[in-house]
Length: 388
Image (cartoon, rainbow, N blue to C red; front, side, top):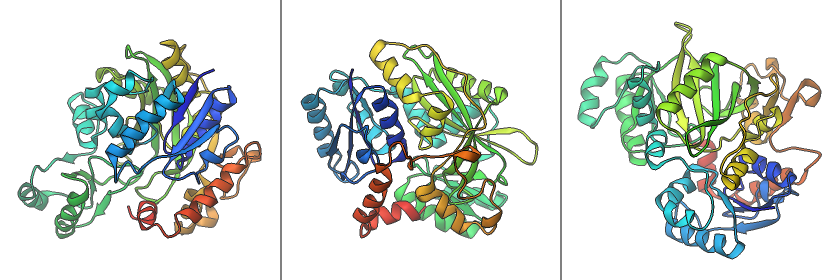
């Protein structure tokens, strides 16, 4: 069988991919800035590697990646998160001469990875979106902000895990927060604030000819931070109308590779509204594998064989959580914590699975706590975890 390199070993989606591929006999190499990661501790990880910081030293990281692919004869590289995908996209021609990569087209990625451009693309194709403003300067924002209805959402064009999103209640706060967010996330945009309604992720896989090869929908049960954070628990559902809407949008984008589309039902009119596209594997990857759509395996097979038979049917009612630390943080922040449904400590008997904790593969739980110790005095990691 082949050999796959997975980056971002700290993330639970990387653990899900390692388990999926390792169970099928694929040799899995896991890499991160430290060996203390959940995925590196998995019994399905053949080798753990350490790379230079992609954020602090992108060129050093890229040279490490090239050398590692050559040294270990990697057939496939899964760049698991945005920080590394950006670097890989910049150097894709050289990398694709050495290995296979699950990447979108350059133009598709440009649109999907910029949340503002993705909303513009959707609006131009008559997909319902929250009312959105795209100020091109602070002066323009100063003029238009007087006419806005508050609260509003201030959103960065590029970020993950809901980082940089702010709920703004008045004009003065908008102007001051815009300046702060702009320093880290240039030219954020503004959307009307919708009272949180049912939230869904549509998860898709396309081949190189922009043909759909995998689909899955999950409903978000809980999040942290509670109002605008990433999901901590999901449930597998079927929603044909939503699937058709998402596929039609991605077909118009002539998509290739993986995509995670987020939609919310607007409580005011009961209509689905497009929120964003994430052009990569999503953190809640494990639930789709449990339900029957094994995206890591489908992606690997498609890259190795040129194409794969599509998988579109799956079990509904499967629930999956991120106990460490997402569900715990949600529990602590939720004023109705003892009325949560399902309760915090629900297990498999109630149809609730966990992204990390597993009797079949227990060591990633230790890896998580080892990582906590490793990052205990790392200011950047604390900011990543708690400063949104």
